[in-house]
Length: 303
Image (cartoon, rainbow, N blue to C red; front, side, top):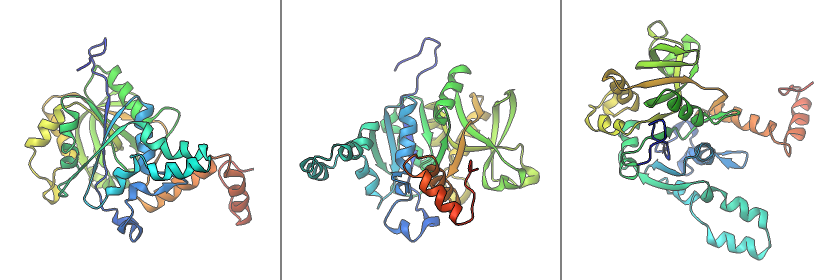
């Protein structure tokens, strides 16, 4: 167990819950996990693992579900395809093929029963042990100058340890779709969390700060999840466990993230991420902008 000079243990592990059924993407999600839907030519799950890798996280646990074996296969070598590409001297394609398996050491565990996202996180415990870890949702992307999870890790370091939740500001009328932070201000972008109120009515929302994207969690979260009683729908929820930690006095911080967030688990969020990604690529943007102008639309940044 390594400890930094300031006494805060570094974050080397990541966990990605990816066991959802993806019903908002039926019928395609009958056979293709929503986490493998592409943003241009890169699936969402690779973008999430890439974010972790960019923040120095080298070991990632994906918590999958029965029937989603293709998630595991995506991060494994494909020797048959590699041999075919080698025969044709397609070195650039070989590099693309091998990119996912080189990002990090990825292990997949299967949550056999859908007992909630807290229960999903608990399935990673044998591989994480007594180490702090980042947890990112498998369908949430934040693009910016600094990876969102790196922002959470930096905040944890700056604040002397503890767990950290990523947040964005939302209109109060949308609070029913989020876990909303009840806390006390620390600085302009940080609060000490007292509780996370799940999907409150607008008039009951304790703030306009919504929990999104993921967390950096101390390993004590596993103990809390083990003893947590089932909540809504008879399931174990991670927000309930984080709230319990805060109520027991453990430091839990809410940090407002910088960057543009996309909820790719939502149809509109996915399409928006796809279009913005295309507009950001030199090989696609000129033709796409021309197409949008032809259709009478003015793309962002167009003059």
